[in-house]
Image (cartoon, rainbow, N blue to C red; front, top):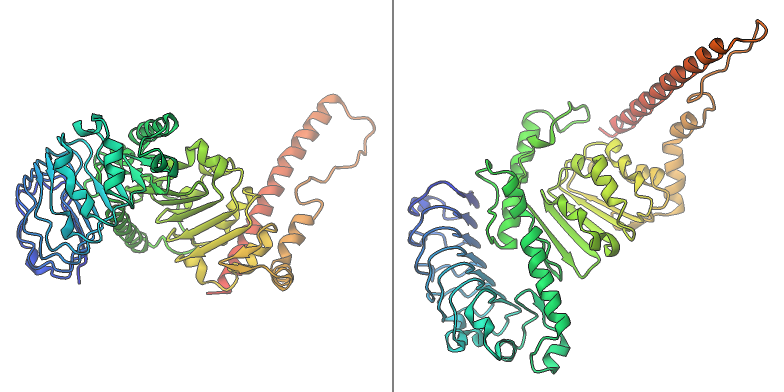
Length: 468
């Protein structure tokens, strides 16, 4: 049964013919020419509805969507927020860049936690009194409205939203609450920096999303199916990335690229074009899809302890440039991989450059099914003390030495990387003879090194094949 449908940027003028997919959970209709919300009556299982960047003027015909959690109507022509009755599961609504003057009916959404109303026309406190009915509201964005310039704006929001944690990308501190809602100069500076950084690269910090999709879509203007460069919700974006990853894996399997013998392939062939990243506190970084640009963040390089990669091609992660970036994370201890198309131990060995690692987790990857994965990591990463959540024991180390002792024999052979120096048999050599001998030595050393590397690779393949 179809549960995900992405019709982004398809010149659609009217929602229709969806009665044939009643099991749909995610519907992406961003960047089209839709004027009315209609014909959704059979989609009672809908979880995410994305209609950003259309020509919608009114919120209507969605009261039956009792399971809807995320609603994205950013960049439309809506003037009044109403018609939210029946949305008892809604946790997030995005209404940025509309023509909104007033907000009503939030009492109909008892689970609402995040409201984004930036860049609208709200100019009176009376026009947003309804926010006090959203008792679970933790994040509110009203920046870009005339209202935010009025005296008492912060006090009004904090007073009416006691559960609020973030207002206009600013974290609500206890000091602000004690100060009757008035932000300090430091708070204002942090807010300005967060907004500027968010506009520049999508790297807003706090326990929040660092959406890299905007930058990626701008870099891939011909990608019709990628996630929007507008304000798609994190949940909706992750669904898009997940679907792109499924398409990518189908492509890989169809081309026979999911085995241990693979042909080289351009990274541009990858179908995962959308990306998203989140930072939790200042130590846990989560990267999804095409969002490796976040590794350039200097502040993260100073504080991040753990990085999780999901829906990210492992070959991209271990490229020389990205390994170089990862080495700058001075406190990095833990790496987690899920859905990365890791297919060989040779790939994993590229992480040896990250000598500070103490924990590695690999799930939902081909290589995770091999019984030798744990002993291989123990062998190649002596500083790692935890693998897939289990501590490394002395027994693990002994087993690893037995399993991979042939590598040690190869690498400890004294002459394998050094050429054998020929003994002099004809008296003193001329300068030209010595130079030629040195040249021959270097060439022989190179050949020996290549032969050794080839043999190590062959042996690794042989060890892996034993698990098949």
